[in-house]
Length: 246
Image (cartoon, rainbow, N blue to C red; front, side, top):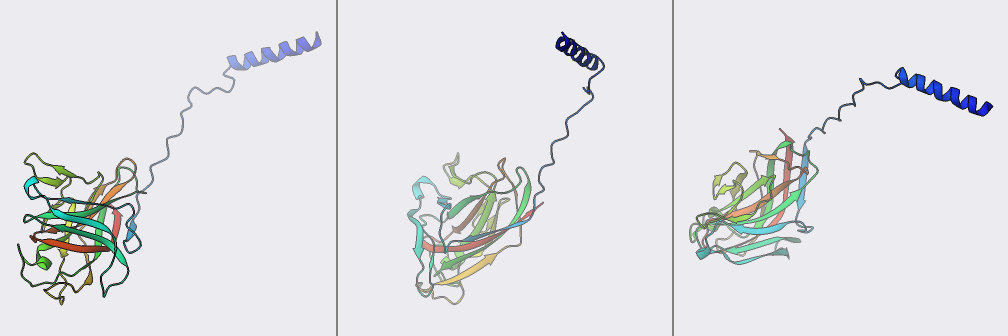
């Protein structure tokens, strides 16, 4: 009986506390979620002399009846006097316009944040400046271009049958809202007969605005937009991309 009495007293006390509020606060509100991370500046270094994993090549700016031929790519040995390896890209332009490009997705950014990207690109070529050629001198008629986007760049057939990138890269020397022209491919002092290789770095301080996707990722594009109506073979060697939050 003693144990039962004690239990009854404890139960009565608990009910009394519950009736009086018993520690329950109906004005409680949960704390607000933590603020999203702040976007920060960063630098992306690309070194094609060590490999090309994660980079996908493509071509654009053509119609069915002038589709580029002799396309090829790979991680290949550089021609003398250069040493090492690079990202080899080649295409035969069967019209007066073809874009050869390589694309790659990078992550680690704040989802939905806006950034400004500036590029430098290092490449190898045997194209000289001031020469003659179909559609213009190779060294002066091929434009080294860069682009960036939150969405994956793809070659898409337009309503008029033109195969274009699905972003506003521009065309040849003309820039778009998502692309910049760094300069022409030619290196001064090389032979107009070709076969003598050199390397060059081009850069631009003009920024490309990009919004990171919902996973905090964005796409980079490096390429050569050719008005030279024949074959162009070249090597991507590296790139540096400076990323700054807006």
